[in-house]
Image (cartoon, one colour):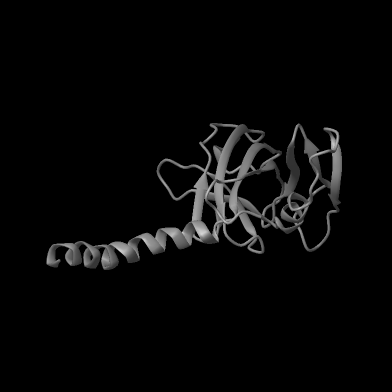
Length: 190
C-alpha cells in the first residue's frame, strides 16, 4: 500500500503545477494570427541615399521581426510572422527600422492596428460564401493608421484582411500587410 501512495503524491506536486500552467496557456489561447509583411512603399531615407529596412511587430510581450532588405526604400519582404492571440482587444504595433552596422538602428516610423473587426468577422459562420466575398470594410480614420480602405475577405475558405498602414512619426512611408487566422487544436478557439 505504501508504494501505491507515493506515486500519487509525486503526480500531484510540482509536476501538476507545471502542467496546469501550460494547460492554462492553451486554455487562454484563441489561436494564431499570421501576419504577412508584404512590402514597404516610399520609406524614409536614413542612410546616404537609401535605407536597410526591417519590420518589428509587437503584441503584448511577443516581438517578431523580418529580415533586413539592403539599400531599398521600397522593400518586398513577403515574410510571415505569427503571433499567439489571447486577447483580441490588444492592438498590434508595427515599427520599421533602418539597420546600421556601427550605430543604433534608426527608427523609420511606426503604426498600430486593431484586430477586433477581423476577429468579429472570423466568428461569423461563412462557410457557404463564394470565394472573394468582401465580409467587412474598415475606413481610414484618425483612430487607425490605415492609408486606404481595408477589406476583410472570404477567400478560398479562409478569412483574409489586407491592410496598408501609413507610418507615423516619420516624413513618409507605408507598409502593406495581410492577416490570416490559424486555428490551433487544443486552444480555446474563437
